Length: 176
Image 1 (tube, rainbow, N blue to C red):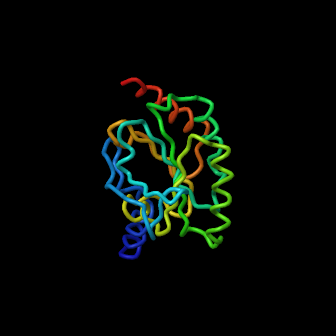
Image 2: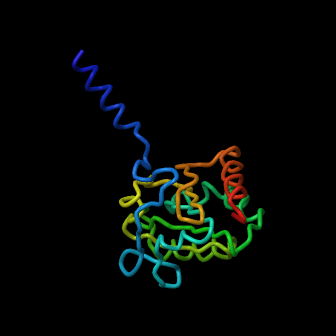
Image 3: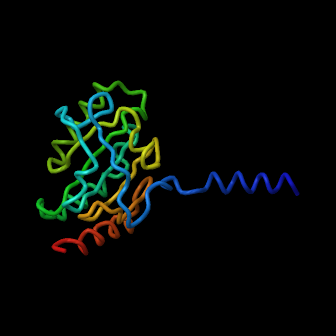
């Protein structure tokens, strides 16, 4: 009986949501990516304070999973949400792969051409994984309202239903 209890406790702990630090309807802890921690492709710092003022979607991606949610990126791009109300970010978890940073940066430049309205950011030290508890070695999609509060999260590949839900929550908040 005691062994069964230990096994059940272990299973319970392993099945807790990955994003336990992120709470729906709440703004996450502020993070800043600059200097050795990362930043934008052009070397400028990035802060989660930027999530305020517009509806924002973050694709937090392990480079080895870079194409996992391209369908969601394409769907958002097709929506042509107004740039004064919507911003997407591709934040790359540079520490999640064995690939050299120079190769990842080259791939990011190609992604920037495909999705020119997206702001690409490098995270060299899994800052968002540590601060927000989001999934590591994955492709995570997070959406925030204009106040920077979490309105959508999915860790891993978005289904067609997930993509439609994401678009729906964004549409519902436009012009509000």
